[in-house]
Length: 245
View 1 (cartoon, one colour):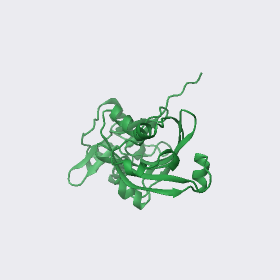
View 2: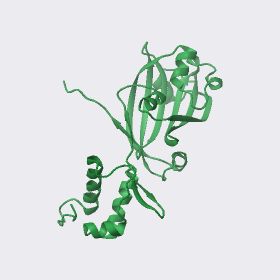
View 3: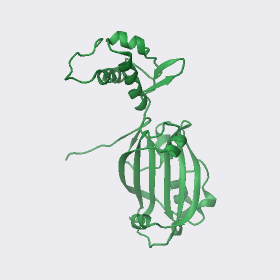
View 4: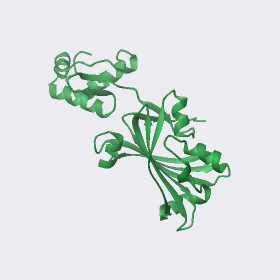
């Protein structure tokens, strides 16, 4: 397709060009690291305005498909991390199983009384103490999510003195406290990053992200952890498997 379809009732030109580039990536004609034509070259090739070409590249950049480097051009960076939300597993194990290098930075850890919401999620009495752990997750040194975990202190006394950067919370719960998490209920929605979150994740303010709330259970079906996570949608994509029968 070297020209856009000239019909006002069809798909807008920038969407046609975006879809063309995505098709080229899917087919292997474009690969990670390949350089795209400049806005001027793209406009001439497809007989569109430079503004349309610029808008197409901006959309692809927001979607995490391309990276625009000042003075160098626009490059394909379609190397999204696939995470499934069917198989319950720790972040560390999930990334290692994919051959990626996970790391974690603890942003804060403290004790607090349960809020009304936490009491509901973890079936606690109002005023019980939980340990609140906030961490920044990295994959191959790139920040991908901000995660907050809330665990009743009665299940993990002294956790704040044990857990360090890069530790797996679930491994510590199992080895130190004999708590094995085996399943979770997860809820997911699209949201936008605020200024503080954007700085931590190294993205533009109000970038689209995936927000999750999770309640994790042990083998006795007891609520052990309530967590929230804000994940970059330009790097991570989720999938699930569904059986119709």
